[in-house]
Length: 411
Image 1 (cartoon, helix red, strand yellow):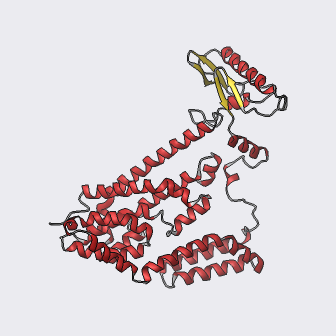
Image 2 (tube, one colour):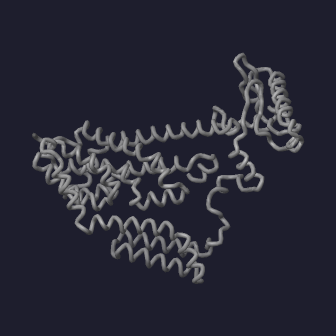
Image 3 (spheres, rainbow, N blue to C red):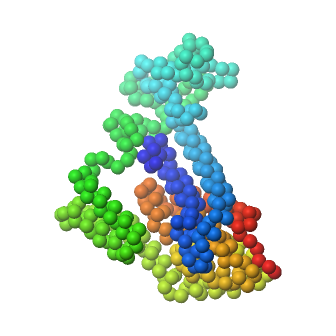
């Protein structure tokens, strides 16, 4: 999707936001990590957790789609504001304006498939062949081009040069050039923007190894099979696989060093986050935090422990790893809730409603990979996604309570 966004000049932050929301909401499926962890920590079946939460998942995805629609509308308005030459109301590039904006050129607006039509309220556009007076459209186009040449030729800098002017006057409307469109058209002139693949990975990059395609495919399949078999520790498996891939694809030590350096930034960031998470899980801090939570919750709130757990899961899973929350805090909260007659499975269901927010955490390698590949700053991603993911989590929690999947205890 990234090449499509780049080709259409859409913000990549929208891509990471929508992807993060969708992935976080769908992360409660039984084969996902959070549900399996909650099931293992509280000794309940994963299907008993997930199936009653299907209405919450469905409504959550509806909210995600609504946010995607909203972001799309925001991008459309941004592009329209950036320049009328970028989009028209139908979503297509208005070529008649772009063609008419050639200073000193001999082309007239409307020749390439669109004409201007005068109305009582101003000037509109319609395709050639539609109802209306063609001569009227030509007159308007000629008038617009004359105004353009008259306005721009005064400086003498661009007259007759064939360059497009910064403004185009058509009737009573003034259209401004969009600098991003100029850049895109410059790419076309260089042969770099003619297709969606122009913004994808360079097919001629030097690190490609087409002769080793089948070897690399076989190595990947072997790694995947060993992952499923769970016969070797994951760190050893990936280290050995990476070493083999480097030795075969890049026999020279210098090339191997370059490949390692190209991935160093992402590796260091992820390793740093994992080490920070280890501080929570290996020092007794999680146990102390869970005990503190139990102590500060008033006894009168006991019957609402499931809902409280859902609310706690939102910031807790963002600030710590899933392992720390599900194996360190959730069992303590569930034990407290049991005194008020709240089943462990209800606590497990409530605990997974914070996943839309959790997946935006810098502790999650997937989100770091997403923003890195999209070239997006993590802070910019959080500005758009955090409050929206919070809304999705609260909606899922509320739906779970309404359908009875997350219940209340006895007073």
